[in-house]
Length: 313
Image 1: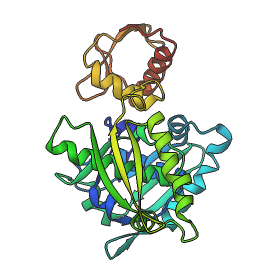
Image 2 (image 1 turned 180 degrees about the vertical axis):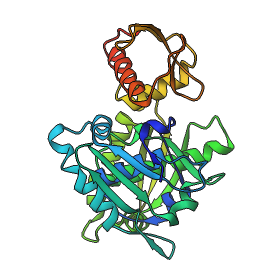
Image 3 (image 1 turned 120 degrees about the vertical axis):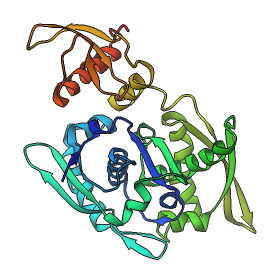
């Protein structure tokens, strides 16, 4: 079975059917949900079958800002939570993955996605949500990540029909939110407001491409629903230096076939002129081919240079 890694899918976009956003009932913690989102971002939507998907712990550490002490503790969370927390979609109960294996000595976790998820992740032509993975990797809380997807999808749905729309308003019943997110019954509305909604307001504005505000609508003294206004945010995810994935996406969007860097290859001592091909892969305009490991090393170098403001294109 072919193994697909982050570098094998240049888009770094989470693409999923809207039924997984509005119809799936589940609760996953922050680490497990970020792992799941990374897996989905690796999936190539044009495929007809799933492959095996691999996440390197170093990539996960870099993308999420996890510390070295934390990262190995996350392996159990990544594997156990995705396999032991089935979710409901309609009347079907599924696990997200059917196999998860940690490759000791390589710092890699391999996953196999449940085959029944094919209609929700593969060959999608319509009714899907698509967003840049960098928007959720710095969010704190699985609940906040799920609320991002709901808000993002409502805004994206509106812009499908009118491209210049900058905001959208939608209603969310508290009971529906509790059902979709599987929020414990012990949570009162004030807990939901403080620990999910207000956190989302702050984190979205600081770290994502959307921002939200909300109003409460009551029946008697009880808050029945919230009216959420979602608008575009030019601050959060547009910081292409916040992690390597955001940087690579920025470079691929803006610098195809540009003269990015002249350098001397450390192995052959030949001069290189590094550029980006239309398929998103690095290449040398002087003819040298880069293997995946070497390409990854060059991306690391370019990213570090960009952060130090020494990369001049």
